Image (cartoon, rainbow, N blue to C red; front, side):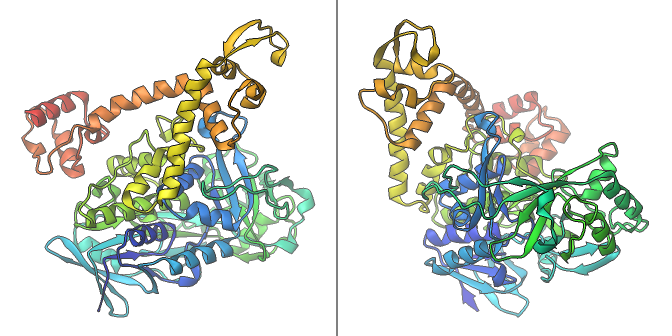
Length: 611
């Protein structure tokens, strides 16, 4: 028997962030992984970021997490997406060397004080008087603990499908985690099943890249972490684009009867991800589409394998080969690893508090794909919040619930615990009401204070963020007082009057570099300049979103007592009462976001609380 403060079960992206967060807070932490050669593995596309997801990665960084720093160390191709669109949807996306990513993550874990990394399969949760006291493993080892955080990904009851063939596995070549699902069910935790999939890996030398559209890394210096210096990557590892055709689709249709999802004998009954469907899903659901775009991505600097993003399938191997050979550039392509689907157990996230602590078992937290989400970034965001809150609870301090106006991470967790999931959840910009507040550039200004409060952000970085925030506010006020007489030759504009620097900067197409010569206190800090330009140009829109967010936050400030009896609120519908009793909201704002709770229900509930 060994004793720890915290045991984290699962060493994927959620587990890494959760374990680092509790260890940084000074708690003896054990991180259990099934295969320690694959810590923080990227089993699907070897990339981090994209719309909304890239912003979550930066939010994790601002909170004191590791994902962005690991990405900067392992990236081989990076770009800013949606540059032709507004700031609210722009985000970084980096292709990473999957082997270097895992190696870097493992090194960070091994060097972290208070953190023990160990290979093992958790099979039992030990609970006494409704509270976690330990975790048992398949080897009969018992780890005593005060807190357990479950971050098991696709491994709980994992089962892989390739055509009519199936095998128990969490990932191809790795065993599933058996036993823990039954242990969780024993304590009233509702477990369900989802499925996801991955495409084939193809031998580099068998691809004709001359027939593919190339996507180079960015020409400007970029970095995910606010602590890392941006850099320009060599153009040695471009990504490429190819497409399916009607011939591809015909082969898919001919083999659908072998599909574990659409076949004569249906083997997979669970729901897959809507926003990352299999290629057969696309063909069935969009029968009029002649073609689907696919991305051809390197798996690493020393790897000879390429990942065919968008070509996920569970069709038989021979069908996969025929489908692949219909793609431009893949006439003679060789599959190294076949595509497959994986079905796995997840826990109903509506049984969690917004802190990610279980309502059924005290001091038990859940984070990542086990909560019904998909994606490395979504997992990391939940992982760092579960670890941060677990540590705060052990310290007897208030836990942190991020608002929907503060972060995509907050939007995601709020959606999970109050709306639940009926398909694997993916973070989208459209899920956030206040997208202009939740930008790629300002995650550190939004969230660093929480990481610092929890003890996982160092003082130096926190003070740097405060300095930027103060600099933006003071400079904007100074710009309003500096007046310049403008002649009509400025930026080819017909202006002959006196304007402030603030008014000049608000003119469309004008940047700080255009007015720097007029500034009596020139600014050289590129980060400060960027934030000032955004605040000046989008200030009116930002102020409007802040006002709307403040209305919501007023409801979130009205607390519902922990022992409040929703069943005794007269006038509320039976459906609303059932949902309120199940969800156990801790604020009126949380109650308002539960589907089925009406404005009149809120009025009656508010009256009873105040009353």
